[in-house]
Length: 299
Image 1 (cartoon, rainbow, N blue to C red):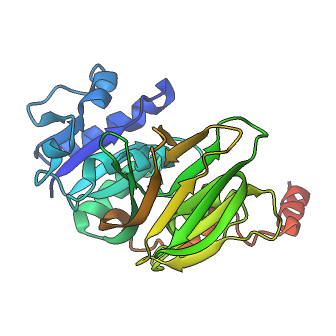
Image 2: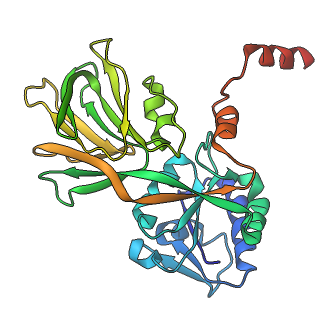
């Protein structure tokens, strides 16, 4: 099995965990591909080895790795899409941050995670990806694991956004903006806008208004075979920001066309992990205030 490593700039507190990961991987006596920017941050803390090679783009990884270790949080995992995209490389997230909803395990579990992967005790979850085409923008085709957002650039200013689904007019949304999200993105920004929680294997796309001016607007769930057209109205008082997974991209000259990408993002899950466990553990889903009261009483 061939491994690659990707990550954000580590804090001093996380250096020992990164050292432990490389110690485990280098004992396999196999080549490890490391993102060049990440390597520049950690090279003074890990042993030099001829088995460490660098990558800087998707082409450097393609056909050369099976699993990419992502060191950071959910945001770091979203960043891996630019590198793994349609390569079929699976991403294993090691949480160095706080929530880590998408990550496979915490930094204290590195030894166990590597051992389970070596034994093959894991499965691959296929996560849908959004493909968006922004007319009038250089490199107009963009991808997102969570969502595409159209938001008012000025806080407190309403924008109007019109939406079509499969060439059928849906409505004009007035408010702070609009989200188009995957099932994976349903537990991200969409959730904070009262969007539904959607299981990752659902074949759908969710359209969620952000702080709508009309309170009758509600999230709409449609088939993932749909094509969505988003038109940012020209007479808006405020300019708008278009973002994919939190990154601002240039506002298109005309419309945004959104559909399901022809490839999926592969996520490593250990055999004892599932989506509902993550909801209960990470989002404290179903937790009663009584649980906290009883804990405090025992303390």
